[in-house]
Image (tube, rainbow, N blue to C red; front, side):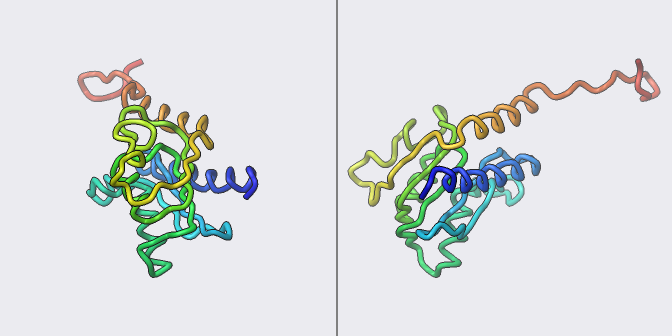
Length: 168
C-alpha cells in the first residue's frame, strides 16, 4: 500500500474526528481497512452522545467491522486512528487480531501503546500488530489542541447590563 493510500485512510479517520468534535465529543476518529484497501467501517468518538464511556472511535469501528464481516477476528485488517489508542482500545486491537495499527498523535497521558501500560509488550498479549505511529500527526494534534483550547478558554461573551442587553 502506498504512502498516499495510507494518508487517504488517515484522512477518513481525521474526517471522523472532525465530525466527533463538531458533536462536542473529543475529536478522535478511526477507520478499519480490509486487506485489499477498502474501508470496512469508520467511526468517531460517541461517549457523550451514547452516554457510554467505552464508545471510543476504535471500539465503534472495530465493532462495526466485525458485525459486517460476521467475525470477531479482523485478521489481515488495518486500523487507522487519529490518537494513540488507550489501554482498553489497544487490548481490543489485540483481541480483534488487527494486522497493522496506524495512529496520528501520541497520547503521553492516556495512551496504551507507546505510553502508559504499553499493552502490546506484555507476555499475556494475545496478538501484537505492526505499529506505525505519527501518520497524520500534525493535523490530529491540531484538532485535539483546538478542541481542548476552546474548552479551557471559551470565547468571552459581551458583558450585559442589568436588563440583560449587551453592553459595548
